Length: 432
Image (cartoon, rainbow, N blue to C red; front, side, top):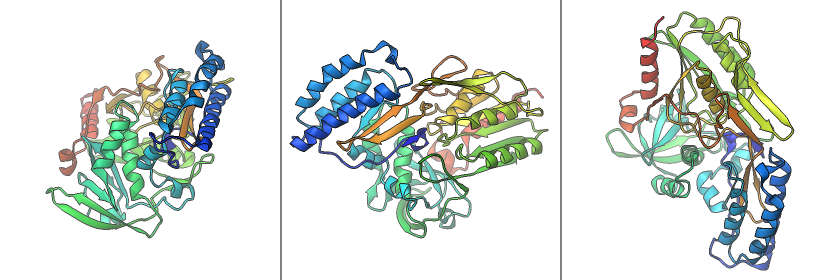
């Protein structure tokens, strides 16, 4: 399955328990998995020379160890050792048990049956699943769910222990925020018309159980490659402070996004500044970053960065507009902003066109693939490298905010948006 990080988390069937002795069939499957990983890296890595690494020597060193592995855990360690020799992110082996925690509903999503939701968005704040946004007109809005409420249980799954397990597994990963939020969101998804029971801790710290219907999410259904269909929407408005504001959930609807951007720029040409909200946007079509950036500059020859694939180099050259918005530009982002969002945010910062507010992005700019191995584990690998215009890789580092702003449950319960408030305050201080 080829994709950017918008589909990073994929459920994979469970493999043999880490400490259980392997059967002959399982040993054979592990050896097949070893050969598949080794061959895939050799055939598809963007650098045919692997930075000078002797890949055949790595194979010859580790193959006997794989043949002697007595447990699934040992076999997985050997595979991770192999891809770890590359010293690059987006290469790893994941057990099926962890994937079950990460995304319980991906099987339904691939069939197109699990894409209905109650209309809730959330983030994990200080270890707690907190509602950060609610779609207007959604089942959650109709039942009175509020921003700042904590989600304690979804169906039979207790959320705090699940969050703790994932944090322990990926504590040092820049993808932690993305994985945590999706692990909870996936459990809210299901078939349209079905109901999910959710236990909340409300603003008064009272436990409330609510049955929430699932409805088709707003937006146009968009498709990219062999990924499951996904809704794409974009919106804009003029804030009371005479600041333009654009938000869109994914880079998958070129026509819709272009229309929204055009309407926003024309409708807010006299605004004091502009805010581009990329929080929670997991990426999508990389080329759309160049088009969006063009609405904020008329200078030719600017680039957001460069992507390197095997035998192909793609320069993310900005498409300037004849009449762009030239005023102050702020970009909002968080740990769930990934891939194309990072390319856009990081690139605008590098060319000194925008100031970034929020928290560091997911550091997952590379196009990557996740495949199921013969032994049941998941294998993620990147097929390209990306260097920002500032000369640094976004992968493993992410786009770094100029002003770090972290949301809190209390602020959400009070109806505040701290990152947006900080961006607007900065814009108001700029000279007209």
